[in-house]
Image 1 (cartoon, rainbow, N blue to C red):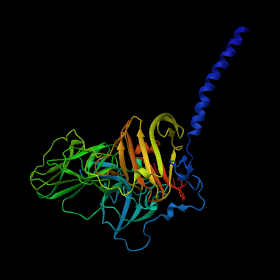
Image 2 (image 1 turned 120 degrees about the horizontal axis):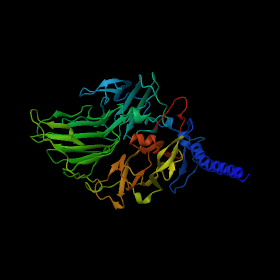
Image 3 (image 1 turned 180 degrees about the horizontal axis):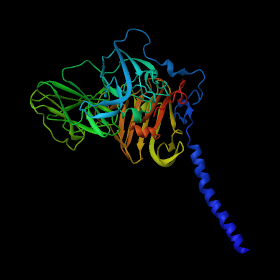
Image 4 (image 1 turned 180 degrees about the vertical axis):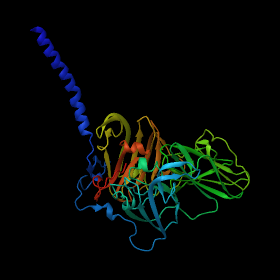
Length: 486
């Protein structure tokens, strides 16, 4: 009899241990599930940054819809472009075959050019992208309805559908467009292209960097390419990093200036030979007079380069130097146009990582302020607010952080104040164990994504939103439109 009791007791203990493990796991699994359809304006919890608020996070009655925050609705556009997206096999400029996505039959897609003040109209047609697609104007602070984020500012454009974007080109600079629907797949596969807001000049060179199936390219070409420019020509090299990781770029053959970052001119740029660390999604404009022997743009390894030289000359080759331009002290100071010390909102954006479940899947997941997606902070502002934000990263990996609809100015890094040109950016590389203080004016009402532009990281939960009080959205993530903004 005692042996029977022992066996029964042993089974009860074992059952208790199993339940003690499975019940918490079941709870964590169930609470990690993301609804099949949800309103992005309702996700997470409201963070008012210490500011006052007139309405609740989920009070959407009588608010302004993002669908009404449009660009110019009438008038003849100065730039009128149709872009057709396809899923297909295609050849890169250097001949390799890729099975991915094109815009007007190529990748990168065609360059869109506008001048400051132009009204730009782009008719986007999805011919055959099965998951739907959109166009996001990366770095251009367009009105919210034109931002191109599926489930947030519009529905994904289905196969056979189209969407018309209209916005006024307000800020000269180098930008790019890309899908913001299943973007970790569609951008990687080639659904993107460059856009420049500035008149063409004889020395302009656009260099769009992208990796297709493990092959890194400049303008869709592996290896080395060249552009012929006469000696003495002021060359402005507009470099766009469409990949998911930071890339060291620079010019060989002459010292050069970093004249613009993310569409904003650098104040008082000085000559340098150091490399520039270009974040994923970021852009930089490099300027130098073409010497008699030419220049060479190097992107990462010396095996990927673009010669810029007089006809018949072989521009210098080699590796980039080990030192890197530090924008915290590069250039000279200039007025910001607002006072960050008088901020109405003060936020923290703490990036971490934890084990657990996300949408029922076990793994290591990114966290924001200790919370996993979708239970992340919704940063709440009112139009006209001066906003300060501290972004810190203890996740073990670097993250290129991208806020839609706004440019921010960097105030400090790791407690060291900025002393150079105002460092305006829309895509900020935040390394592991780094802390940045940034500031901006909330002057573009809407519901704006704020996410890591290493796009798989966004898929893994490193994204949230900046939301203006009183703004609503009629769109839903998931649902019949199958919106996946990532």
